[in-house]
Image (cartoon, one colour):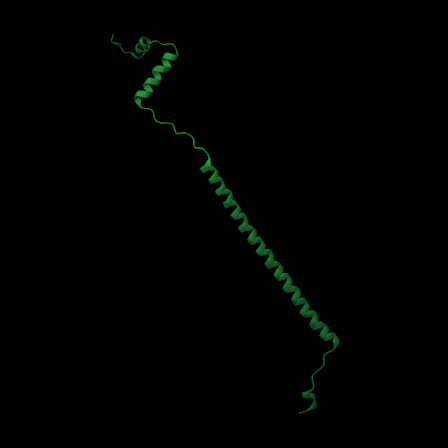
Length: 110
């Protein structure tokens, strides 16, 4: 073995500093990559949180609707009830039963 094969080549201080600089730059790039991933993750979680809040609002509105008192339903009136109501309104307006019958073209039996 010759001496040149056994000895290591010594690098100068500038070469070692340049290598360290490249490693530092690689690490800085890694930091910026991690920061962008972090921002993307934060944005994704913000979207998820917003959608969950919308669901909560919808469910609260549904709960409020359920707990609110319901409007009473109007019952259907039978034919007899409608006729009685019409006669009552006519009587309130001052018509006598004979006049109502005359307007309807009906003869009352006495």
